[in-house]
Amino acid sequence: MKPLNLDTYLPYRLSVASNKVSALIARAYEARFGLTIPQWRVLAVLSEGQALSQQGLVARTAMDKVTVSRAVQALVVRGLLVSRPSLKDRRAVELTLSDAGISIVDDVAPVALAFEKALIEAIGGPSAEKLDGMLRKLEDQAEKLAK
Image (tube, rainbow, N blue to C red; front, side, top):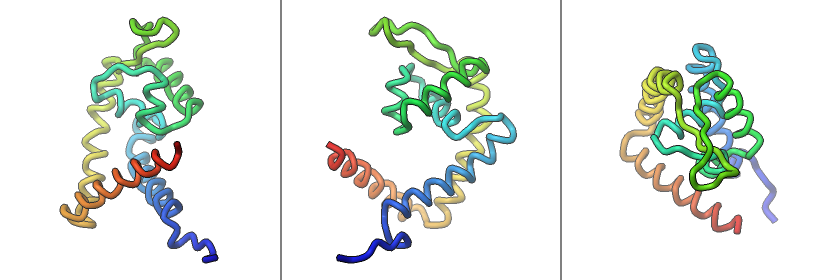
């Protein structure tokens, strides 16, 4: 049996790359807006316009329930999210961005997009498109293997 070598172990490499990229972008919004990585992810997902429950945010962000719950609570307290009872499920609430939440996303998004552009430039546009396709395949396969 081949020994485990983290330098070539795909799950480890993906995790390290993800953590480094997230930390890079996080510096741009942590200091200026006091947001954690999970809080920014919640804001970014909700900025796409669809109201979501916490369960919907868990599914969309691939973060665990506790992390999403803490991020949502902090954002509601800060007035960046609006929480309303769900019309579909009385036990759930629907979350949307408040005007203040929209304003923060409007300030952070260009910075995040500039980092993305710099990362894409490092590998080139065509390679970035291939990487996107490969990441989608890996995500799909991970979901299949989890069942």
